[in-house]
Amino acid sequence: MLEIAEKDILHSLERDNPWWTMTAPMDLDKKFPHRRAYFKGFRDLAFNWNVRRSIILMGPRRVGKTVMLQQLISDAIKEGVLPNSILFVSIDTPLYSGMPLQKLLDLFHNQTGCDPDGRRLIIFDEIQYLKDWEVHLKVLTDQFPNTRFVASGSAAAALRLKSQESGAGRFTDYFLPPLTFSEFLDFSQLEQTLISETHNGRTKRYQARDITALNNAFVDYINFGGYPEAVLNSEVRTNTQRYLGRDIVDKVLLRDLPSLYGIQDIQELNRLFSTIAYHTGQEISLGKLASSSNVAPNTLSRYLEYLEAAFLIVRVTRVDNAGQTFQRMRTFKVYLTNPSMRSALFAPVGADDEAMGNLAETAIFSQWFHSEEIRHLHYARWKSGRTDLEVDLVKVDQATLRPVWAYEIKWSDRYVDQPGELRGLITLASKKEKFPVQVGATTRTLSGETTVDGITIRHFPCALHCYQIGKNLTAGLPA
Image (tube, rainbow, N blue to C red):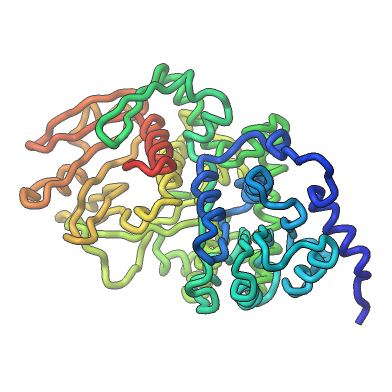
């Protein structure tokens, strides 16, 4: 078998690690000035040298993982890590195809002369392209206790990390979601103009200085705001279908998932994802979906697992009006992890389009994806006589297995004047004296409270609520 010349591999490594040969410190902040709100937590985890674990940075494509890794390198150099003790390798580079991590590390040692027993930062970007990467990384983690290994993955990393025992006790995962709405406003330099801040104990509360302008920004966020590149680059923003939509389809659906899982019918998977993306936030019955698509339920279940592993979708389970889960999950809701994915695949939406309701709901859920609380969030649906009642978002307390709070996600002011139409919320909150449930409903512009049948319902603008969840959760505060 023909082999790639070692000098070509070394040339590639030197090109991707320019700090090896620079006489003056390299300030990567000038190249990447905008930092994600999640960067501090990731940085603190990576630079905790007292814990001997490798860090796995996971998240969907185009949310800024590689940029955050470059910013980590910048901070490492500022903190005194020797530039020739830092290695950045993108595993999806064809030159490194199938190359063991140990081989790359040996080339790095020989080229830079770094101390293998000293403090080092080694980064493997897109590590999922190396077969059995967990085993490779485990060996290196044990072999070099003073080296901080950081690996990133945009497809299958979560599924494989959790299904393999190789990394138990040696890997710590860190999830980077798409931009939150608060990050979008920050990157767009709109945050101070549109939001004012108040304090209520540990929880920060916010008010909109101009709710119309905030709503306009919220629609922009839904259309392209989940991707840092689109926020910062007007050319990408004006043609997200070309620059982002095709990247999702071509690189994830047509390349990543088929190569990792051996999927034969790529178009079948593509059709499924397109259907889910178009109808994000709607309830899905696996049986009905199998019947309408002529795809076996087991195959559909596997496809959904693959799409979740690639961080394209998240499934939310159903509870009844008592907060109890069902023994068999026949139906569930599926959300895009990033509402902007829909417009990137199809077309942007306007504030008055019918799809805005489901996309606003998707945006709200997407703010929770980095939080452990996502495991406790559900939607409720149950029979009341001949009527189906539903509540969009219910948090279930794990100690009591009862609903703690619930609210409907609406992109309309109608329910402030007609709160009695929120029958699902009212029924859910009634007869819960021992375990009272706080209930609310988002609006388009209005704030206030209404009372129906003794149940107090809080009303608050959807865009402002979306901002508050993302802002507080990234700061480690209650949402």
